[in-house]
Length: 290
Image (tube, rainbow, N blue to C red; front, side, top):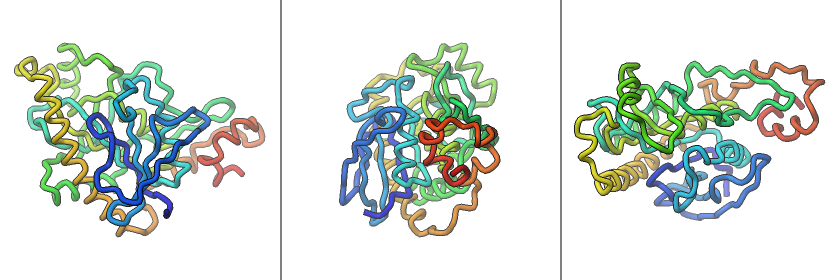
């Protein structure tokens, strides 16, 4: 199989990728332990892709337990250069109803103590993160949503809470006062690690329901939410397929800057980097520090 330049991370409700052919399951080990599940390698309309279930098949990992570093590192080892990350979210705005997709270009971090960097242990790096998702990839996904007739809003702010409990009503109203669009529990951690790994990253936030600020929130049943999850998953599969077709045609060099995020970020004198750290991070820093 050709190198999988495109990675797909499936969130709640999306534990496999429909339409894959030539499927191979790859069990991997990384310096950060195993990923959430086996990486599923296959072809989507002839384009090599790598699919990974964020929470593991059967939904075994809570948002705080997901091995984010292992997941991104494993995709990097497989040659992935761009990640489509699918995530179930709650809406913080009336204009983002259930079944709408939002493609955030900003995040607010409300997590507590997650390991969201590969660096440390004798090697300091400070990557630019003013624009945390890839604008080029976001445009392609927005076009794919339009082609698939899936309602989409490109741009907006994703509040990344810790979980696993949902927000209090006071928190939900606070986030609304900040102008945030959606709330979830996973994607900022991935976005930070993807940037350090020089991988283009886009969040496809799939709205399942309104967060608890909404006056009708308590009337929503688990059955309705599960139904929305399933409908979103079906729409996501179509959008991913459309996006992959566009990416497969775009074989030129990435011009977004994601692929050179570490160029000016590595601060430590190379002579002082511990050998163990240098070896562990070789897939990330090898083109800058031999």
